[in-house]
Image 1 (cartoon, helix red, strand yellow):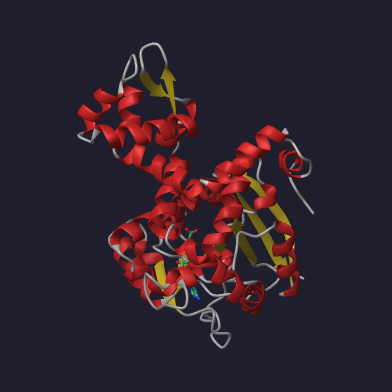
Image 2: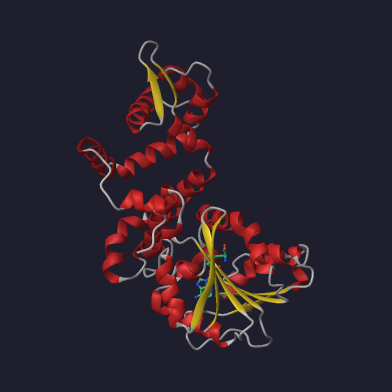
Length: 365
Ligand SMILES: C[S@@+](CC[C@H](N)C(=O)[O-])C[C@H]1O[C@@H](n2cnc3c(N)ncnc32)[C@H](O)[C@@H]1O
């Protein structure tokens, strides 16, 4: 199985001493409360207060500054000490921020992941067991009766929507600049943006190239959000919308014109293997020898850093319990195999864009 050298080093042999392994096992056992304490130390501003203090702060000073009870501050600080987000000076009983605490409040990816996990996933993951056994997103039910999260996106509570889009946009936005260079090196005049969401990529395309026309394919209810978000922006008159549900195998891609480029960013991870073959096969039907399909995904095996692969394999379980019950963040070899089944072949793979995206460029076999 393909793995980058860093991941091979991390995942192919035992690295921990018995003591470290036991500590890690306890971390897992207490994972839910570790998460919640850290989230609240951030939300109540305790970590920020510690960051801004020159000599650290006592429990009493923190209680006074936050308005929390002495009890609340004490239990959170003692837990945080053992988690490792704060440090204690035993002479003065003053707490300060640790390196991990600093990352917790300043690292953009960590912040986006924490909001996503609390607002979108936390309650749903309680139903992971049913989801795994039944192949359905059992953790979505408390939000609404939709078969997948995508049908419900536009109706989710606003805080949940904010965290969902924050997560989605954070990852794809950071790769768009490099992705534009790769896609527009072939000077496409027409581009089909499949799963174009709120139109952020389409807007970048029409700004980058003043001749290109973009057609966004997405669920009809999603296109309404896209039209609202793109209205009045530069080049929006060169963005069209085409509503369709790609889970319906009878629905074909628009055949009104020839598309030089078909773009699928963070899209195929929303589908199970058979569905991917169905979607890519329908894309292949509207392609000729000159057209290219660009699949931009965060493949977990192609990550340069271990935390990135960790985030991705964990994200797979959001797909299991909340999104749709059958999709995941794919291994690049699995995606290449599915592309092959759909009568396309991988021409090149560009790695290390933004937060760890790759672009698989595919052409007709
Ligand atoms: C994870 S988002 C990716 C958005 C965007 N391409 C990006 O890179 O940020 C997946 C998109 O696929 C759309 N989608 C999911 N299921 C779909 C379906 N069955 N038919 C059409 N679009 C679908 C969603 O509405 C959403 O806009």
